[in-house]
Length: 457
Length: 170
View 1 (cartoon, rainbow over the protein chains, first blue to last red):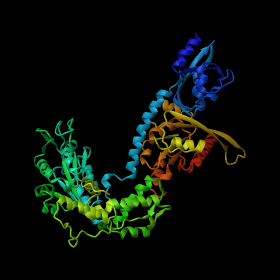
View 2 (cartoon, chains in turn blue, yellow):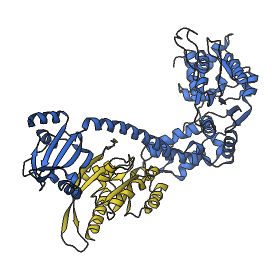
View 3 (cartoon, helix red, strand yellow):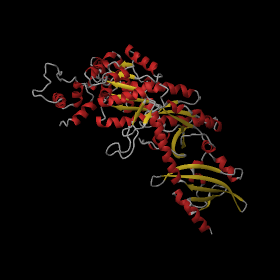
View 4 (cartoon, rainbow over the protein chains, first blue to last red):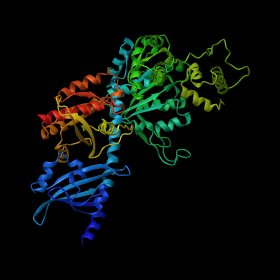
């Protein structure tokens, strides 16, 4: 009979042992020895040797022995097995009497499988919380995301505070590349009542002209080849929140009228649909070009410009911020030192001078990259000038009127643009970043055009 | 070992018992028990040191206080409350587990180990923050430790052992 019980219990991963009033092992199941992974000898092995976790709980164990305590339980105890794998078990001590003598019945339940699953779930939950916590402690909250106290930064801060809760107003953010237009758009969103609603961003330069309409407005099944199912556009995704159009000047002219119509009526149709849809979104647009000049050149619709330009803000370039450059650099040092697990880092006097005397064509984005590199290579407690590697202003001659832009032979606008890009790339020795900067384009726009004109690098 | 998740309780134990550190984070479930012996003098005047066997109960993050956790607390001679210096919020729920611990073990000493100090420069504001906050609980010392580098880990456990012996002597 005992054999049968033992088989059933071990099948259920339960082991047992009985301890005498002197805490010696009196009897045990075979599975008990297997779980303990050590020899267990009747009348010799003591409870405290088998379970050091009971040291400190002598009073409770005594209470169980005397029958004063109904049970004593320790759950989810973990031990390393001989194969250095974690084994989890529950330990239950119960009063037990044999021939009128008080004893302890010890039941061990191997819960390794169930507890390991629980461990994995908790591991993931904790890792997520840790990552969130790391992010919030490493990076100041977005509401204080603008570093510096120069008058120009103060203007930006006040603008954000004033405009954040006026949802109906369209906002146009202007400024050179890398001045933080995206950050300001997110700050406006996060400080507004829409903070918990979606913030959807679309970079008009990074999406091919042929796709941008379907990306923004969505499409119905069968609207075009390969449209095998209907798809929400980004505008619908942004419903209730903020729709941020970066590099609005790159929005194809053909699409500008459809977008204007949406701004006027708050309705639109998906591609291939006759159904009018309505969404409620705040529109923020950004550009690093002079939109008014684009209007004059006929590249941007005047009516759309006026519709967007209800409230506009020009973000200052980094070189306009004076000593705020150092504050911003310190901010990035703090972030990267944390990321790269460096303890103490600050800018030396000479390094500060080097940062202040540079003209920062790539603005904050460029400064961030420079600081990231400096933090990686700094050895001691100070970042020295040698750690600060600045990309010199590309020595590309301006594409000025003195340099005839028009090819000798009459040719198309397509070919002219292609040639200008090829020339800029050649002068920049193939460096796309420098070529883009010389042409006043973003890197994404340049890459898109390289692909479009099939320029071989 | 008490404290919020991810503060490095298991890492401190691992450093103290095995002198090892693992960059991977492995959430503890329930309780993990390990031990190490220390030679300590019973008092400053005693000549011969005694062999003190520390049984370390590394407890999982405590979400809600319950009877099972109180079972773990019973019979404890001391506690190391661990924090993560990079996460001031790791202090927030101290009262939830430390007050029940003290209720069960009123004479057991407690020390505070503010861990991961290799991640922050010594002049960071969080050092002062934890010093001030831990004073609220009238514990023993507040030590800034690093399980990664081993900084002040030995000292933390030795200090606790000394306090335990002192409390035992009283």
